[in-house]
Image (cartoon, rainbow, N blue to C red; front, side, top):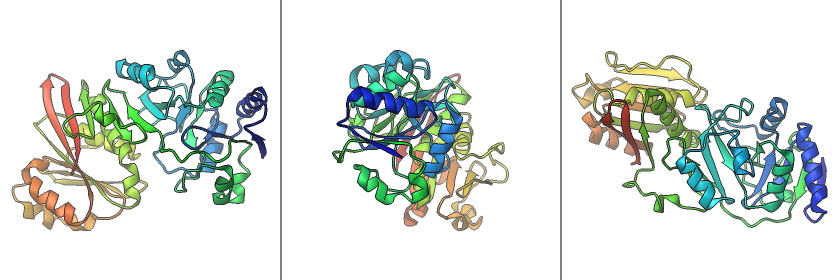
Length: 362
């Protein structure tokens, strides 16, 4: 491992970092939030090495650094909302999620084919990005589950020897201010959804009746992808809890498609069908089970309880309940007593394939 001080000549640091990235190495570097770790996002071996280092949880995509807007267009689709963020808020502690053009290696994009872009407010990193000419990862330099690092010394203290040996270059910027992580904004449906809060509280600028996520979808695949994005936002909840999605809306508004998106994010490959006749289907995934419930033909709340709903209350399980409005108060009370994370998902028919979907935390 090579350590180079931020006080070294800038050209030397840029040249050395570029060399390491080009060879598929890992570079720890300072940003305006915390220390990040970079690997060539187009190099499968480099990303494999990074994932070995991070011991990354399944299903978690990687964001990347790209400094120039025209270069960004080579890797993602920029709609009006994304353009607005780039023009008015960047560089800064924001990750902008957009539809990927598929030019990064496997393991970088999300399950739904999106890519998060960082344009950090840190001149040295922007210049390294320009010089390198390709995206490199912007994930924090800590191992998964470990605290975010604000100094190289503290980072090394939390790393086992084998993990340290994977790092090729460290740019030591000293003790960094303990700023919040970047705000993660999903712009894929040309609306603004905050997937992770950071320094900027965009909810104040884009308020939508207290909904935490919203989408106006125009096809089944867009509804599937929105379900996947929503599950991604709450993926970390599964480390210590269940997550319950209570879906309500008219027939044909996309509840099953949304559930397919949840399953997609969880890595479930089986075909998801609405359990209209058998009421409950379960699908195993790496963390637990997706419990898909359809209340269309259920007439009494007691029927659900007698199906053994209690037995599915395990850490890591996800519930997707269609027609939840039939027993909404009962279900809300049942899950609240278990201190389980609950979300209400409302579906509204607009026109033909167009649907308005809102997510509310309960």
